[in-house]
Image (cartoon, rainbow, N blue to C red; front, side, top):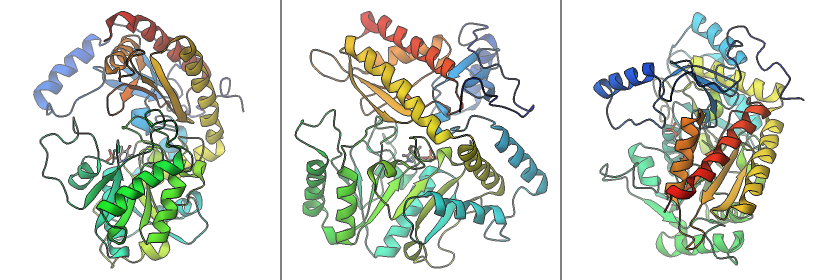
Length: 459
Ligand SMILES: *Cc1c(COP(=O)(O)O)cnc(C)c1O
């Protein structure tokens, strides 16, 4: 399929958003400045924003702000609008559903959409065993429920997570998240029975630490400090998101999954960020041939409507007593309608293949840049989940200031670029799969300019 010339948007409802970058004012423009004043007066300072511009419309690879600036989207609202914002099928499905009924609560009078999403997840997630799904509202909530399910199913308490992990901001998921600032600082005490094991981080690990050795290192820690027979579940992001788009060494995930199987612990894949086509497969564990016992999805699942899921082996999911799982809004009918439309869009528009094309473009250009710029320590990622990690070329130390300078340059030029990583020294590329090659190319050129200009201001 030709992704540049095709009409991405046959629906008149959202097809009029020009797919080009355009700066009508300085960033931020006057209307955004005005709204930011209102935000400061009305919204908690704890809720920060990456860019100071307010959105008016978004589609394809563009976010248009209230001043008429059109920004190239390299963030997808943090890996959520994978099929594009206001994607035509999603708009249609949600419009139909909102007119039919908005909510009954699945636990009171259920509806078909919830079941249809569970059926599709059983087909799309790895493994051909019998599966069940439970739906929730947010990634954090779904991770919490995966832990609840794992504890009931195994009769054990301990949860093992990894260095650099991000699993959310609720009390239990804060305990599971690694980074103190801004996610945990001052918010404790945190939930107990959460243990942290060393991650495989090829760029920072010694060269001889391959996936197998990294897994042995983690397992040795778990066996000595937690006890193999105490572990309910290992919860791991197959590619870490907020922690820095860390792709573990080949074999690491498979060795951990095998250890889980041998020791009666569950292998839980947190695919909240890496799932739903983002990495060029439906789920990132597929690249490693791993079949998780439980898989958590959210973010990209419903094109921006709040939905999250735990999908797993039938006997594990069914071990919970009736009424033990649920919530007022979990699997809301609008969100379910959106999820079914997202799945159809990924399938019909060949978006898994598109994610792999985006990987080729981004990784290719980043590697090219890396040849002549030793500050780019590492280029990594899969599909449309790609990152560059910046270091001081002399000391090898993380260079967060450079990542911030590059992102700030991008923002001034009308490119939504995000940073991540334990040391804040990673620029991440998370474009919607509906972005054109031209916009991707233009955004990359601006990032490269930012890098060239960041030369003086860093260290
Ligand atoms: C974003 C994220 C979460 C939390 O999801 P929310 O919807 O923000 O609660 C959990 N795990 C991973 C890997 C994430 O990227």
